[in-house]
Amino acid sequence: MGFSRRTWDALLLLLLNLSLSLLCSAEDPFVFYDFKVSYITASPLGVPQQVIAINGQFPGPVINSTTNNNVVVNVRNKLDESLLLHWSGIQQRRSSWQDGLLGTNCPIPPKWNWTYQFQVKDQIGSFYYFPSTNFQKASGGFGGFIINNRDIIPLPFGTPDGDITILIGDWYTKNHTALRKELNGGKDLGMPDGVLINGKGPYRYNTTLVPDGIEHETITVHPGKTYRLRVHNVGISTSLNFRIQSHNLLLVETEGSYTVQQNYTSLDIHVGQSYSFLLTTDQNASTDYYIVASARFVNETVWQRVTGVAILHYTNSKGKASGPLPDPPQDQFDKTYSMNQARSIRWNVTASGARPNPQGSFHYGSINVTDIYVLKNKPPVSIDGKQRTTLNGISFINPTTPIRLADQYKVKGAYKLGFPMKPLTGAPKTETSIINGTYKGFMEVILQNNVTKVQSYHLSGYAFFVVGMDFGEWTENSRGTYNKWDGIARATVQVYPGAWTAILISLDNVGAWNLRTENLDSWYLGQETYIRVINPEVNNKTEFPVPDNALFCGALSHLQKPEDISMANTIVSPGSTLLFALLMLIYALLSVPR
Image: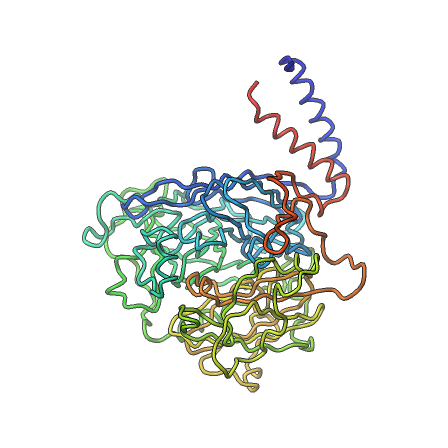
């Protein structure tokens, strides 16, 4: 027998009152998102194609949170293949169980629900999420992720009048399955078909290069205001130069660190990188203005047709943008300008971050290094008849049983410790070989790029210190050039062709953390590894237990129960767990027609 409307409303009121009473005593608030990941048909470059949408949106919705929030994302996988969402740059403190990568999590099967729950502990900044399996990022499924500062922590700049997320990236009109097939067949992806801005193609600034009928992005602003632009390169493998006609971009933050504030007329944003700019709308409104994202270090004549163009529209604008695009840096064959620009991005050591103390209070330059890894990539090679990419001569094979699950359940042979600290001298090989990190150690990693394209490298679970970069081969003497005071702390860094980048990592976050190239084609073909960081103390409290809703695969497949849509509840206190359960019950009841 069903409830009457009056009884139903009384039940909801009771649950709401109980939730509110618990909320007053809860440690940290929750933010909830329900993601339905599915295919839709879209035509971002004028050609109908299958893209991956979230809740019918391409790109997906922005996750908006605040320092120390518990973020709960229920994912319904409506695709025809397994899925994982990865939260790029979010430091999952003590919980690689929620990181959304094949080395840390079993994938969500097609047509299943699974709920991520993690805390954005002591973090602020601009990040994004994307699907990490099966080359799916090439078809979409990405969106912005904001972590606002708490009200008691002042921003190191005036409160902006608006907050705008901009996703830029190269794009192919073939979907991810076709591109994946080409890579598996030993082919290169070739030049992309375009660059999208917020999932849309270029404004028709040139009737020869841009066909008619393509929808473009328009960002509307009021004159005399200041806006925070959070710009993310969510593309596959192309470094992009971002600029706005006649406007300066005041850089203030990158991937969770406030920067020394500097104006740029344009900035190179490499694959996987995120930046925050302050844009002041101080120009006259005689016309709209171009927003441009163009490929770097390529033959610009050939690549003109892939340039991304959006419109900055003042509310009092008197006409459309017209004429040529603002010029990119004129250094097609010389990457020195770009490297010097990258070196100019420095940590604001006087600004408070997520806590009320200066970011620079961590004196990384005076800590003794415990482990040194020189990681070198090379052009793709054939291993056992298949094209593969490598780090130190090893092409990574994802484990069938994720690393920490294998540890917890004592699965032997799931992976191999002892990833080489220097490049191998023998023939390249495929292995599930990972780095055995020293808990509370201080690791120096030198990334040496021996291919002809810029490579971006990302480390999950950490913000590392970028202390040096230069052309040529790194040597011991290169340490004399390191920035030991205000090198930026971030999660993704570029390495120029024929050059090196040095980073320092404080290994204080227990778990298994992915170190990879963000260039999706090279990542897919094996250019990655993991750093496993374990606290040797018995009964340690430095890592959360396996979540209640963990998925099992590989050697542990027999432990997997039929679809379980229960929520993970291992990272919150008992009171918060009860609150969480009540809120989810209310959410479910509100979804039922009455």
